[in-house]
Length: 501
Image (cartoon, rainbow, N blue to C red; front, side):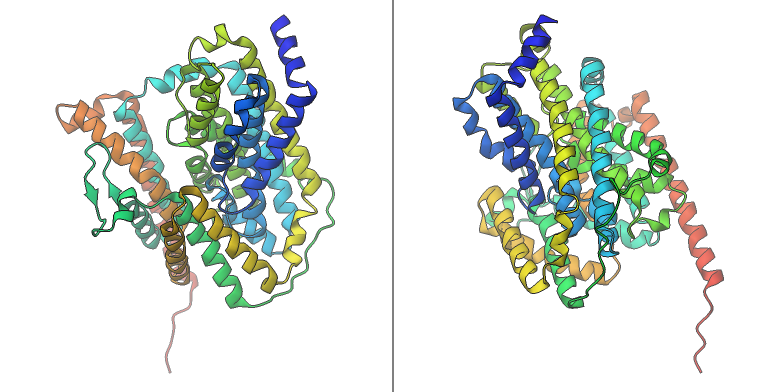
């Protein structure tokens, strides 16, 4: 109790608390601006912590992390551009709802879902994190292969309505991920003799092209369309009944976020897409997804915020970062002489409490700040296109360049802006492409490791966990295919035949 009280006093000291507030504010800004991610925010502020004490420095980084992940909601909702990879799935329904004149309602749903997902992951973090981390670290290559295969089958779910084109889009994403040096053996693939392609295609310019450039192009093509925007809503524009109806969705999506956050390399970038696909799979009205369905926003935002707490679990308990941000946070801990791992809870109990308290405060403060701004942010939609889109285009170029400081990434962004426009015009969904691009490299890495560890390929099926996961994947594929066939037959019966006279 003495250590806990001392930790509270450290966190609420004027300098530490102001740094936490500042970090949250900077994180929200980085998350809101397309191309400036939470990873970039934490990386840029890491040198600032050199001159700070351990408590103040760690609070600053935690604030930027939580604020950055949550801030992606703003751009995803109002502009249809994911501020961070963790908000990709949010754009699918939040932006259509915003375009339908309900940006405040879309923001309110996202803010409430973010709060619930964050608190859920906080509870997991402070209660059973060491136990869960031990289970996660015991997963071998076979279990990872089966898990990622299960996640990849969700491409079929995201493609419902046009499964052939959706699966094609997913294959394109996986193929793009093959460009560059191969994992493990380092063979150059599909580089065509271009030095820049040896590093592969980065996720950030890809999503900036597919979402930002494509969206800007499509909106300009439509021209100025003035729509009435409803800014006068009560509270969070979320009813108690709606929340209760989405209880299972929120719990499932938050659990997916925590679980994938704990697995190295998965993180919020994959969790929001997988949670969205699962919500669509379980929904009674899957045809409404992509047109402004609240369920999709609840799923994506609760999952990506829950993944923050999930990623902190292996970092703190085992010293293994769950995603790119926690990898930088791990460096921040070590700079101040703190070694995350099994002995952290014994040797540095005060710092553990500081992280817990800082994480919880960040969730609450982000919630308050976004609530205060949820009626202010949508006024962006009232800015004329000829002012708004040049600013957005400039920000996307800066964001694409700033991550790796390569003009090549800007060209990649522009190329995929054209590719995305062509795909959408031909009714090819973008979500499966992104899911394939994110999960494809992980699947290849763990499949190679599984084959290297086994004397024959069949040994992958020796693991009971792997068998269960692969069985679940096959069931999902069968159910989705059957549903797709029924929908096609139903449409054929209800659609009158074309008669040429």
